[in-house]
Image (cartoon, helix red, strand yellow):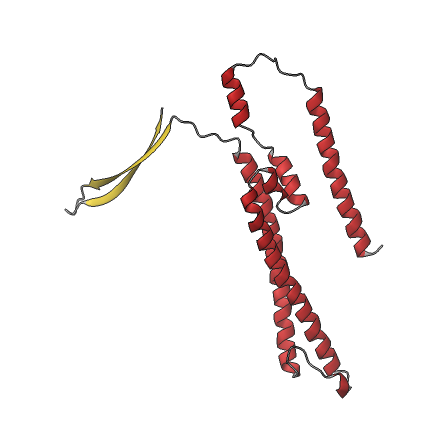
Length: 201
C-alpha cells in the first residue's frame, strides 16, 4: 500500500472518529434530564456569561486541524499566529528539501563521469561546495521538522490550557494592590522596594 493511500486512510479515519465522538456527545446531552424551567434571574445571567470549554475536545480539535482548538476556545485572534508560524516553518522546510534534492542531484551528476551533466546547482559547481550545501540543507530539513513538530505540539497545548482556564473565574472580591515602601537597613541606607498585597474579601 502506498504512502499516499495510507495518509488518506488515516486522515479519513481521524475525521470519522471526530464526528463519531461529537455525535455520541450530542446523544448523551439529549438523554440527560432537562433542568427545571423555573430559573431565577441570577442563574440565567451566570449561564449566559459563563460557558466553560472542555479541554479534551479542544485537544481533539487542535490535533485534527491546527488552529481548530483556538477556534473552539473562541480565541480567533490566535489562529493567524498558528497558521503564520506553522506556514512559515513549512515553507522553510520545503525549501530545504528542494535545495537538498538539487545539491544531491548535482553531486551525482558531477560524479557520473559525464561532463554534459555537470550543471551545478544554484551557482555552485565544485564538489566540495555542493557537499557543504547539501549538508547545510540536510540540517535545515532536520531543524524544520523539529520546529514544525514543536509548533504543532505548542498549539495543541495552548488550546488545552486555554480551555482548562476557561473554568477559572475572576471574582469581584479579589483586590491586588501595590505600593512603594522604604525599609530600614542595618547598614544605614534605607532600602526602597515594592509591596504587593492580595486581598480576598
